[in-house]
Image 1 (spheres, helix red, strand yellow):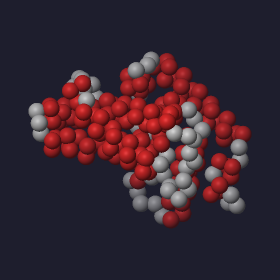
Image 2 (cartoon, rainbow, N blue to C red):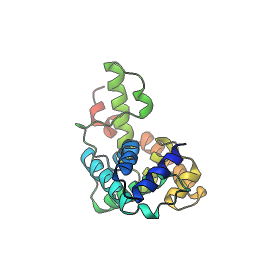
Image 3 (cartoon, rainbow, N blue to C red):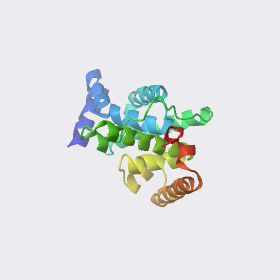
Length: 195
C-alpha cells in the first residue's frame, strides 16, 4: 500500500503537482534526517544534507524506477551525499552539547529524567563508536540496525552484493568490539568520567 501511494505521488509530481512531492518529503523527512545525522554527527550539517538529498531526488525523479522502493531509493541518495560530505571534510568530534536524538524505539514511552539521561549517554557512546568506523562500515551498520533493512535491501541500495554487506557488517561489529575492549568508557565519552 505505501509503495503504491509513493508511486502515485511520484507520478503526480512528474505531472507537475508540486504538492505531491511535498507529501513524499513529509513522509520521509525524519528517515532522511536520521540517516544523515547518524552519518555526519552534526545536526546542522544533517539538516543541510537532508535538504540536498530531497533536492537531488526531485531533480532526478524521472530516473526513479517505480517498481522499487521509493524509501530505499531516497536513502541511497542520502547516503551517497553523506559519504561525499565525509570525504570532503576532516575528522570532527561529536559535540557533547548537541545530544543524539534517541532511537525511534526509545521514543514510544516518555522516559523519566534518569532513563532519559542513561539513554542519552548510551546514544552518545554509540555515536562516538560509530565515528571511528569508515563511512562504508558506518553506513552498513546504520542501515541494518537503525533502519532494519535486509542484507538484500542494503546491497541493492549500495549497488553491491549481499555477501559484501555481510562482510562489512562483520568487520564493523569486530571493530566496534575491539574499540569497546581496548578503551575505557571514559576515554570514549568524556561525559562519563567520574561516573
